[in-house]
Length: 107
Image (cartoon, rainbow, N blue to C red):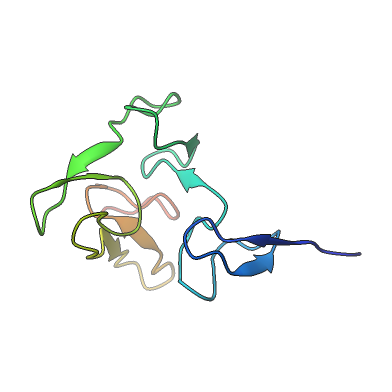
């Protein structure tokens, strides 16, 4: 089956259209943004997730400037992610999440 390459939204690198992360820049959402709470598709023009209502602009814990909920801060570039402590999961999660969206364990 033929696979088509698409550009990563964050770095422009052409990657497989079925990829769940970009091997070039490491983004976990190379073709769009996902809500950190419910994983629904979101857009930078939205103020809140249409699926769960989570606010999509927050204060960065590092530089205290407003930023969109994505892998890293738009202002200072520091990561907004933390790793799940479940040894069977270890998935990266948004820093404000209380439970892992992959395994459901408390963070």
